[in-house]
Length: 207
Image (tube, rainbow, N blue to C red; front, top):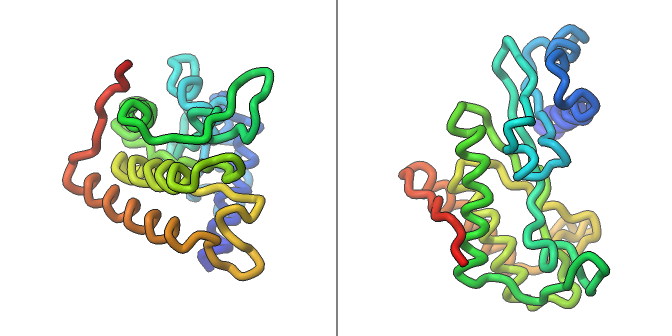
């Protein structure tokens, strides 16, 4: 049942990607029949980028049912979270986790809180992750668990994205790194506890 509900949610999200930014996109889905009159709608942010989605030019569709959430992706900094090797547009980084990088993470997600969550619009981190090739193992664990913790502390739903079996083996249906699994569960619990107590870190990044 849960799988069917999630499938319906993401099918609706895919449809809304085509309408994102159109004022009547919610009306189009609501009028299409079935459960669409009341279902939750997932709106993809502009290019699923936090800064672009938080820009004043981005507008959520009007929805008389007020049942919408916004989705963005998190792969910052790209040198660590995307690049395995140097590219013409950036330099690969093997490490992550300095105090400044931790503050930058909190600052980035805090933008979504101020623009959306504070106005009653739920936020889903629809993708986040990083490769393992040419990365320090401890940094991979720290990055993935830190994003999970901070997103949970902000009241968001973080979704670890892995289509390469780097972190989750689809054959055995198990995490490939048991320590990472433990770290993620702990991070999620710590984040939810911080959210419930109102102690999420919204400290701005500093040089």
